[in-house]
Amino acid sequence: MALDPETFAQLIDTVRRFVAERLRPLEADVEANDAIPDAVVAEMKEMGLFGLSIAEEHGGLGLTMTEECRVAIEMGRTTPAFRSTFGTNVGIGSQGLVMAGTPEQKTQWLPRIASGEVVTSFALTEPDVGSDSGSVKTRAVHDGDVYRLSGTKRYITNADKADLFTVMARTGEEPGGRGVSAFLVPRDLPGITIGEPEKKMGQKGAKVADVNFDDVPVPAANMLGQPGEGFKIAMRVLDRGRLHISAVCVGVAERLIADCVAYASDRKQFGKPIAEHQLIQGMLADAKTEALAARALVLETADKKDRGEDVVLESAAAKYFASEMVGRVADRAVQIYGGAGYIADYGIERLYRDVRLFRIYEGTSQIQQIIIARETLKRGG
Image 1 (tube, rainbow, N blue to C red):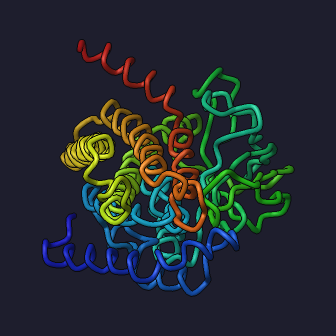
Image 2 (image 1 turned 180 degrees about the horizontal axis):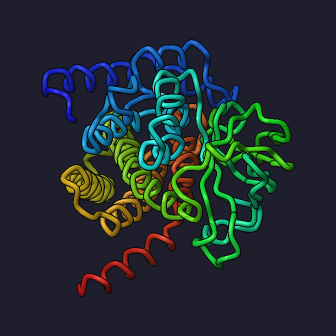
């Protein structure tokens, strides 16, 4: 259920001021320390950001997809690691539970996820299983009232601080996704170890690490949905996650464009601000046009999802276009700033590195192309 317009406007204004006044001044510190300050995380919890997509009955804000995307756009105007702090709770870390959880599972976990007391993580990718996500090798063997879980998951966002993992594991012998089931796996079960966080190109402050499961006894009651439904659940979760990430891409692009306009209006070459040179204007025009197109596609698709329509194709198209778009905008931003764009002090090179990941996670651009083509063929055009 959507918030009333006045309440939602207040939420957007609060998030916008939080980003501008609290988060942006901390960007260089987050980059240098590779960590989000604890005080900022506490403020995010107080604002309800960990429960944006969780129903009010479970302690969340219960935003619609359109409202969630608009909040994500605002959060995109700062270092993406800030959004990642609560992003898994809002998206892939909680939505399997929202979509397929039993009433008991929801009561046990969702209120604490919404408050930020429990941090969630989504464990699908493996050392040799990435885009072919139906080929997971992690195995869960039924043993009385538990499933014994063994395997390794790789590049798992927030693994270093997660309290609850949604894990995809093979429970049957059926090939592909038909043999995959989903499990809610608390971090404190015996046999779970977390690897050291990886050193990454960008998005410092958002950690990814391996998660190893060694004969972990997961209660059978912790299965999400029915045996063999894990892959379907994962794909439904990713459909929503792709829209959220698309909205973040729009926000980053809009921030970069605003920064470019300010810099180009101040920086002078050949006796006038570089904003008055037509080749600079051309780059600004291309960036603005693409950002507007991405925003329109994201919000239109979110509205369709809120109406209950099938948006598998549109979500993939939004993710594909928005993530590629923000990469081009970031590249133009470096060019407009010139040498300054390559220097860390201005933050442009940091965002240039940060946005590269958007074309990879939640399904690479090539996976989105396959989905878009497949769905287009199914629809007949």
